[in-house]
Image 1 (spheres, rainbow, N blue to C red):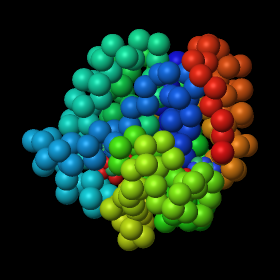
Image 2 (image 1 turned 90 degrees about the vertical axis):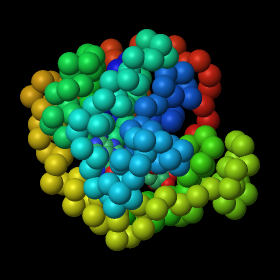
Image 3 (image 1 turned 180 degrees about the vertical axis):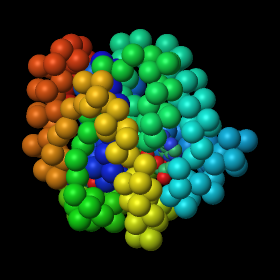
Length: 225
Ligand code: ADP
Ligand code: ADP
Protein backbone atom coordinates (compact mmCIF):
# COMPACT_ATOMS: atom_id res chain seq x y z
CA UNK A 1 0.00 0.00 0.00
CA UNK A 2 1.87 3.06 -1.24
CA UNK A 3 -0.33 6.06 -0.67
CA UNK A 4 -0.11 9.79 -0.18
CA UNK A 5 -2.48 11.70 2.10
CA UNK A 6 -3.46 15.12 0.81
CA UNK A 7 -5.42 17.80 2.61
CA UNK A 8 -5.28 21.22 4.23
CA UNK A 9 -3.61 21.62 7.60
CA UNK A 10 -6.02 20.14 10.14
CA UNK A 11 -7.67 17.72 7.68
CA UNK A 12 -6.46 14.78 9.78
CA UNK A 13 -3.54 13.50 7.71
CA UNK A 14 -1.41 12.74 10.77
CA UNK A 15 -4.31 11.17 12.64
CA UNK A 16 -5.26 8.72 9.87
CA UNK A 17 -1.66 7.97 8.91
CA UNK A 18 -1.01 6.90 12.50
CA UNK A 19 -4.06 4.65 12.51
CA UNK A 20 -2.83 2.77 9.42
CA UNK A 21 0.74 2.69 10.74
CA UNK A 22 -0.39 1.11 14.01
CA UNK A 23 -2.82 -1.37 12.45
CA UNK A 24 -0.84 -2.50 9.39
CA UNK A 25 2.76 -1.86 10.52
CA UNK A 26 3.79 0.28 7.59
CA UNK A 27 5.70 3.52 8.14
CA UNK A 28 4.04 6.91 8.42
CA UNK A 29 6.36 9.32 6.66
CA UNK A 30 5.61 12.93 7.46
CA UNK A 31 7.84 15.56 5.88
CA UNK A 32 6.67 18.02 8.55
CA UNK A 33 7.78 15.63 11.35
CA UNK A 34 11.13 15.03 9.60
CA UNK A 35 11.69 18.78 9.29
CA UNK A 36 10.72 19.50 12.89
CA UNK A 37 13.11 16.77 14.12
CA UNK A 38 15.95 18.21 12.01
CA UNK A 39 15.27 21.68 13.42
CA UNK A 40 15.18 20.37 17.00
CA UNK A 41 18.50 18.53 16.46
CA UNK A 42 19.98 21.69 14.89
CA UNK A 43 21.40 19.77 11.91
CA UNK A 44 22.66 21.48 8.76
CA UNK A 45 19.35 20.67 7.05
CA UNK A 46 17.45 21.92 10.11
CA UNK A 47 19.22 25.28 10.05
CA UNK A 48 18.49 25.63 6.32
CA UNK A 49 14.72 25.07 6.66
CA UNK A 50 13.95 26.59 10.09
CA UNK A 51 12.64 29.96 8.89
CA UNK A 52 10.39 28.42 6.24
CA UNK A 53 8.78 25.96 8.64
CA UNK A 54 8.32 28.41 11.50
CA UNK A 55 6.64 30.94 9.22
CA UNK A 56 4.41 28.36 7.52
CA UNK A 57 6.11 28.82 4.14
CA UNK A 58 6.88 25.92 1.80
CA UNK A 59 10.42 24.54 1.97
CA UNK A 60 12.00 24.68 -1.54
CA UNK A 61 11.14 21.66 -3.73
CA UNK A 62 14.72 20.44 -4.31
CA UNK A 63 15.35 20.13 -0.56
CA UNK A 64 12.05 18.30 0.12
CA UNK A 65 12.44 15.91 -2.83
CA UNK A 66 15.94 14.90 -1.68
CA UNK A 67 14.67 14.20 1.86
CA UNK A 68 11.77 12.04 0.61
CA UNK A 69 13.94 10.14 -1.87
CA UNK A 70 16.37 9.19 0.91
CA UNK A 71 13.56 8.15 3.25
CA UNK A 72 11.86 5.93 0.65
CA UNK A 73 15.11 4.01 0.18
CA UNK A 74 14.90 2.68 3.75
CA UNK A 75 14.05 -1.06 4.01
CA UNK A 76 10.97 -0.51 6.22
CA UNK A 77 9.05 0.77 3.17
CA UNK A 78 8.94 -2.60 1.31
CA UNK A 79 5.29 -3.42 2.18
CA UNK A 80 4.20 0.14 1.60
CA UNK A 81 4.06 3.50 3.35
CA UNK A 82 1.82 6.45 4.03
CA UNK A 83 3.22 9.76 2.93
CA UNK A 84 1.80 12.69 4.86
CA UNK A 85 2.47 16.29 3.88
CA UNK A 86 4.12 15.39 0.58
CA UNK A 87 3.61 16.25 -2.27
CA UNK A 88 2.60 19.86 -1.80
CA UNK A 89 3.45 21.03 -5.33
CA UNK A 90 3.12 19.62 -8.83
CA UNK A 91 6.92 19.45 -9.11
CA UNK A 92 7.00 17.29 -5.96
CA UNK A 93 4.20 15.02 -7.27
CA UNK A 94 6.01 14.41 -10.54
CA UNK A 95 9.33 13.84 -8.77
CA UNK A 96 7.64 11.21 -6.56
CA UNK A 97 6.51 9.26 -9.63
CA UNK A 98 10.15 9.09 -10.70
CA UNK A 99 11.14 7.69 -7.31
CA UNK A 100 8.40 5.02 -6.88
CA UNK A 101 4.89 3.99 -8.00
CA UNK A 102 2.10 5.50 -5.90
CA UNK A 103 -1.17 3.47 -5.74
CA UNK A 104 -3.48 6.28 -4.67
CA UNK A 105 -3.69 9.84 -3.44
CA UNK A 106 -6.29 10.22 -0.70
CA UNK A 107 -7.63 13.76 -0.46
CA UNK A 108 -9.10 14.47 2.97
CA UNK A 109 -11.52 17.29 2.20
CA UNK A 110 -12.01 19.59 5.20
CA UNK A 111 -13.75 22.95 5.49
CA UNK A 112 -11.68 25.89 6.67
CA UNK A 113 -13.90 26.49 9.67
CA UNK A 114 -13.45 22.94 10.99
CA UNK A 115 -9.73 22.84 10.27
CA UNK A 116 -8.96 26.08 12.08
CA UNK A 117 -10.80 24.94 15.23
CA UNK A 118 -9.01 21.59 15.18
CA UNK A 119 -5.58 23.16 14.87
CA UNK A 120 -6.18 25.65 17.64
CA UNK A 121 -6.75 22.66 19.98
CA UNK A 122 -4.05 20.32 18.67
CA UNK A 123 -1.50 18.91 21.14
CA UNK A 124 1.33 16.63 20.01
CA UNK A 125 3.57 14.19 21.89
CA UNK A 126 7.20 15.21 21.25
CA UNK A 127 8.36 11.61 21.86
CA UNK A 128 6.04 9.40 19.73
CA UNK A 129 4.29 11.98 17.53
CA UNK A 130 0.77 10.99 18.62
CA UNK A 131 -1.81 13.72 18.11
CA UNK A 132 -4.45 14.80 20.66
CA UNK A 133 -6.94 17.63 20.88
CA UNK A 134 -8.27 19.71 23.75
CA UNK A 135 -11.68 20.18 22.07
CA UNK A 136 -12.22 16.81 20.33
CA UNK A 137 -11.49 13.13 20.83
CA UNK A 138 -8.84 11.89 21.28
CA UNK A 139 -8.24 13.85 24.45
CA UNK A 140 -5.29 12.70 26.61
CA UNK A 141 -6.39 10.66 29.67
CA UNK A 142 -4.31 12.92 31.93
CA UNK A 143 -4.23 16.65 31.03
CA UNK A 144 -1.37 17.59 28.69
CA UNK A 145 0.26 14.14 29.01
CA UNK A 146 0.74 11.38 26.38
CA UNK A 147 -1.31 8.21 27.10
CA UNK A 148 1.49 6.00 25.77
CA UNK A 149 4.73 7.38 27.20
CA UNK A 150 3.68 10.04 29.72
CA UNK A 151 5.60 12.81 27.94
CA UNK A 152 4.32 16.39 28.33
CA UNK A 153 2.33 17.30 25.22
CA UNK A 154 3.33 20.38 23.25
CA UNK A 155 1.62 22.84 20.92
CA UNK A 156 3.29 23.40 17.57
CA UNK A 157 4.68 26.88 16.96
CA UNK A 158 2.97 26.98 13.59
CA UNK A 159 -0.47 26.27 15.12
CA UNK A 160 -0.58 29.90 16.29
CA UNK A 161 -3.66 31.48 14.64
CA UNK A 162 -1.62 33.89 12.50
CA UNK A 163 0.61 31.14 11.14
CA UNK A 164 -2.39 28.84 10.56
CA UNK A 165 -3.92 31.50 8.31
CA UNK A 166 -0.62 31.81 6.41
CA UNK A 167 -0.45 28.01 5.97
CA UNK A 168 -4.00 28.08 4.61
CA UNK A 169 -3.16 30.72 2.02
CA UNK A 170 -0.08 28.79 0.90
CA UNK A 171 -2.09 25.56 0.72
CA UNK A 172 -4.82 26.95 -1.52
CA UNK A 173 -2.36 28.77 -3.77
CA UNK A 174 -0.29 25.72 -4.53
CA UNK A 175 -2.52 22.73 -4.14
CA UNK A 176 -5.10 22.47 -6.92
CA UNK A 177 -2.62 21.36 -9.60
CA UNK A 178 -1.58 18.47 -7.34
CA UNK A 179 -5.20 17.30 -6.92
CA UNK A 180 -5.74 17.58 -10.68
CA UNK A 181 -2.56 15.63 -11.38
CA UNK A 182 -3.81 12.65 -9.37
CA UNK A 183 -7.32 13.00 -10.79
CA UNK A 184 -5.97 12.94 -14.36
CA UNK A 185 -3.86 9.87 -13.64
CA UNK A 186 -6.91 8.16 -12.05
CA UNK A 187 -5.39 7.77 -8.64
CA UNK A 188 -7.45 10.33 -6.68
CA UNK A 189 -9.73 9.24 -3.80
CA UNK A 190 -11.73 12.00 -2.07
CA UNK A 191 -13.18 11.61 1.42
CA UNK A 192 -15.25 14.08 3.47
CA UNK A 193 -12.97 14.73 6.45
CA UNK A 194 -15.28 17.12 8.33
CA UNK A 195 -16.77 14.01 9.92
CA UNK A 196 -15.51 12.46 13.15
CA UNK A 197 -12.53 10.12 13.24
CA UNK A 198 -14.84 7.20 14.11
CA UNK A 199 -16.85 7.84 10.94
CA UNK A 200 -13.95 8.53 8.58
CA UNK A 201 -11.74 5.54 9.49
CA UNK A 202 -14.12 2.77 8.28
CA UNK A 203 -14.99 4.73 5.12
CA UNK A 204 -11.33 5.17 4.29
CA UNK A 205 -10.44 1.56 5.02
CA UNK A 206 -13.34 0.25 2.92
CA UNK A 207 -12.42 2.37 -0.12
CA UNK A 208 -8.78 1.28 0.05
CA UNK A 209 -9.72 -2.41 0.33
CA UNK A 210 -12.32 -2.21 -2.48
CA UNK A 211 -9.80 -0.59 -4.78
CA UNK A 212 -7.30 -3.36 -3.93
CA UNK A 213 -4.84 -0.82 -2.59
CA UNK A 214 -4.99 -2.12 0.96
CA UNK A 215 -4.31 -5.85 0.90
CA UNK A 216 -2.18 -6.18 4.02
CA UNK A 217 -3.26 -8.21 7.06
CA UNK A 218 -3.57 -6.22 10.30
CA UNK A 219 -0.53 -6.72 12.54
CA UNK A 220 -2.42 -5.57 15.65
CA UNK A 221 -5.83 -4.42 16.74
CA UNK A 222 -6.31 -0.68 17.05
CA UNK A 223 -9.08 0.69 19.24
CA UNK A 224 -10.43 4.11 18.31
CA UNK A 225 -11.07 6.22 21.42
P1 ADP B 1 -3.07 17.31 9.70
O1 ADP B 1 -1.94 16.31 9.81
O2 ADP B 1 -3.91 17.11 8.47
O3 ADP B 1 -2.63 18.75 9.86
P2 ADP B 1 -3.92 16.20 12.31
O4 ADP B 1 -4.12 14.75 12.07
O5 ADP B 1 -2.71 16.62 13.04
O6 ADP B 1 -4.07 17.04 10.92
O7 ADP B 1 -5.28 16.69 13.08
C1 ADP B 1 -5.49 18.00 13.53
C2 ADP B 1 -6.18 18.00 14.90
O8 ADP B 1 -7.59 17.73 14.75
C3 ADP B 1 -5.67 16.93 15.85
O9 ADP B 1 -5.57 17.53 17.12
C4 ADP B 1 -6.78 15.85 15.84
O10 ADP B 1 -6.80 15.13 17.05
C5 ADP B 1 -8.02 16.72 15.68
N1 ADP B 1 -9.25 16.09 15.13
C6 ADP B 1 -10.48 16.26 15.61
N2 ADP B 1 -11.42 15.63 14.89
C7 ADP B 1 -10.79 15.07 13.88
C8 ADP B 1 -11.23 14.29 12.77
N3 ADP B 1 -12.50 13.98 12.54
N4 ADP B 1 -10.29 13.86 11.94
C9 ADP B 1 -8.99 14.19 12.15
N5 ADP B 1 -8.52 14.94 13.17
C10 ADP B 1 -9.41 15.36 14.04
P1 ADP C 1 0.43 20.70 8.12
O1 ADP C 1 -0.22 20.52 9.43
O2 ADP C 1 0.48 22.08 7.56
O3 ADP C 1 0.03 19.70 7.12
P2 ADP C 1 3.18 19.72 8.20
O4 ADP C 1 3.59 19.16 9.49
O5 ADP C 1 2.89 18.82 7.08
O6 ADP C 1 1.94 20.67 8.52
O7 ADP C 1 4.26 20.76 7.70
C1 ADP C 1 4.79 21.78 8.51
C2 ADP C 1 5.71 22.69 7.69
O8 ADP C 1 6.79 21.93 7.10
C3 ADP C 1 5.01 23.34 6.49
O9 ADP C 1 4.34 24.54 6.87
C4 ADP C 1 6.22 23.60 5.58
O10 ADP C 1 7.00 24.72 6.03
C5 ADP C 1 7.09 22.37 5.79
N1 ADP C 1 6.76 21.27 4.83
C6 ADP C 1 6.28 20.04 5.14
N2 ADP C 1 6.11 19.28 4.05
C7 ADP C 1 6.48 20.06 3.00
C8 ADP C 1 6.51 19.85 1.59
N3 ADP C 1 6.12 18.69 1.03
N4 ADP C 1 6.95 20.87 0.81
C9 ADP C 1 7.35 22.01 1.35
N5 ADP C 1 7.34 22.29 2.66
C10 ADP C 1 6.91 21.32 3.49
